[in-house]
Image (cartoon, rainbow, N blue to C red; front, top):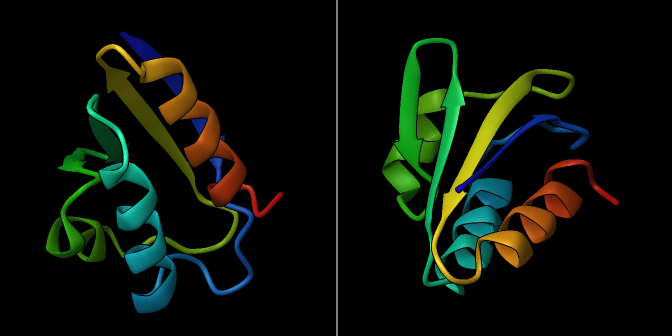
Length: 84
């Protein structure tokens, strides 16, 4: 299992289109992937769950991955969230 705190670097934050892209990226992996903000923890492969977080640029989230491809999953999600 890997955990990492990541600051969102997307100009618009996580609104509909970036959430859809994030869910697409997360869904490519077999690992379980969760994103936490405050006291909410949601499955990163769930569009409705991700939309419920309402995350803005500059906010910090904790990303947790667990599974055989957890390292690549957390690296790819970090690149997307930081807009690298």
